[in-house]
Amino acid sequence: MLTRPLAAFDIDGVLADVRHRLRHVERRPKNWEAFFAAAPDDPPLAPGVALVLESAKNCEVVYVTGRPERCRADTLAWFEKHGLPAGRLSMRGGRDRRPARIAKPELLQRLAAGRVVAVVVDDDPAVCAAYGQAGFPVLRAEWMGSEPALRQAQEDEGRT
Image (cartoon, rainbow, N blue to C red; front, side, top):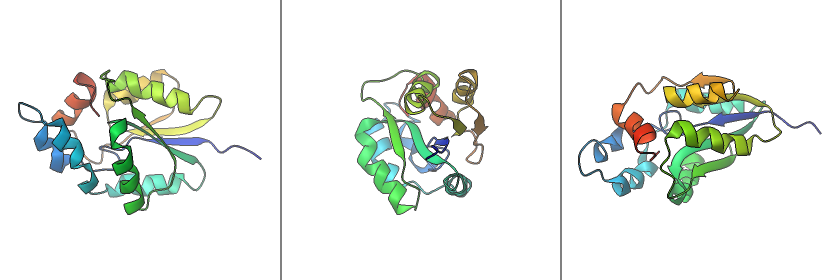
C-alpha cells in the first residue's frame, strides 16, 4: 500500500477567521484566555476550507498550528462542526513561546518524518519562508488579509 503525501494546514488565518477575537490582544493587558476562549466561534474561511477538502482527495491532511495544546478539544470540535477532514493535529506545548517561524516547522518535521509533503499552507510570511528554507513546498494563504495583531502574536509573542 502506498502512503499518500501530506498536505499540512495552519488554522488561524487559513481555515479560521480570527478577526472577531483580535480585540482581546490588540490592547494592554492582552487577554489571551479570552482570545483562545473565543476560538470556537471563528467563522470558517471559505477558500481555506475548499483547499483542505480538495487536498484530502489525494493527500493525508495534517494540521500544524501555533495554538497551545490546551485548545485541542475546542479545535477538534471546530473541525467537526465545519466539516473539515480528520487529520493529525500538531500544537505547541503550553509553555512554548518560540516564534511561529521556529516552532511550526519543527512541528511539521516531526509529522513528516519519512513522508512526502505535497504542500504546506500558512498565512504568516515568516513561517512560509521558514518552511521553504526547510525544503517544504509552500502556499501562502492571503485570503484573510494581513492582521498586525495576529502577526505579533505569532512571531513576537509565540502565542498562536
